Each structure stands twice: as C-alpha cells, then as structure tokens.
Length: 192
Image (tube, rainbow, N blue to C red; front, side, top):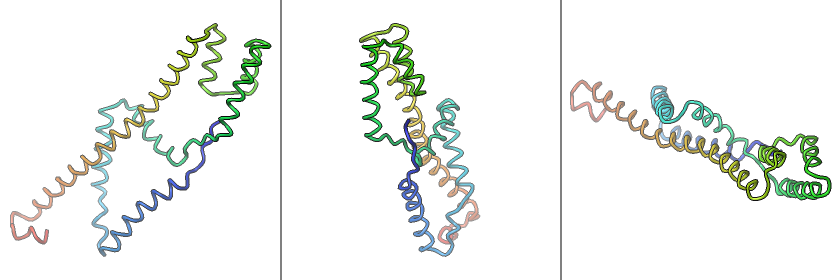
C-alpha cells in the first residue's frame, strides 16, 4: 500500500512565501488594508473558476481542485516497498510454474491486494490472455491511468493561465472606477 505522509516542507514553503509578502506589505505601510479586497478575490477566483468550467467538464474541474489538497499529503513509495513488490511478483511466478495460476489468484485474494494493475492482470490471465497481448493490455491500462492523472494537471495549468488574465481585468476595472471617482478633474490624478 502506498503511504501518504503529511509534507511539512510543503506547508512551511507556502507559509514562508505568503509570510514574506505579508511582512513586506506590513513593513512598508501602515495602511496595509488597501491590499485586501474581497471584490478582487471574487473577480480573480470566480473568473478563473468560471472560465475553467467553460473549458472542461465540471466533474474533472472539481476533481482537480480537490487534488490540490494532495500536495500536503504526497505519495511516498519507499525502495523497501518496491523491493517487496518485486520479490512478490517473482514468488508468484514460481508458484504459478509449480501449482498453476489458481494458487496465485488465491494468494492475491487472501492478501486483499487492491492495486488496480495487479487486479487487472489477474483478471486478464484468468481469462486466458498470455504473452505479448497481456503485456500490451497492461501497458494500455498504465497509459490510461497516467492520462487520467494528467487531465488534473492540465486543468490546474489552465487555471494558472487564466488567473493572471482575470487579475489584469480586475486592475483595469479598478482604474476605470478610480478615474470615474475623480469627477473629470485632471488635478485629482496625482492624489488618486
């Protein structure tokens, strides 16, 4: 089983990054609340979310947003685990040669192995698929798993591209509002 362990370094990196900006703002001005704008947050996050929902199916967008929390709990696969898995497959091969595949199936079911690749391989072998065709079908499964995971990455990359654009639109709207509030008097540009 793949373990997910809380990544303290990821958490500290985010806290440190946000903390540096916060410190610079608070250290530079006493009116730091001018940097806090709920309307701006709504415009950027809402616009980014809306544009992403237009670009992709809602199910995939929501799955991608939820996957962001996975950065705090990354998958850790130790070399010990990889060695154990390799030894298990070698052992299953020996058992298959001596006792037949039914014995291997029994071992997989008794150990309650939930790995989708092992389960799929077991199902293929039990239906009589062999050799190069078995290898090709397993490689196709691995490729499809990777493609499904890349969808999340592509959606997050698209969102990262949309966010600065909506930030610029928000800045433009803010400038228009500021100029309108000056009442048409060019002398107010400096103080504004």
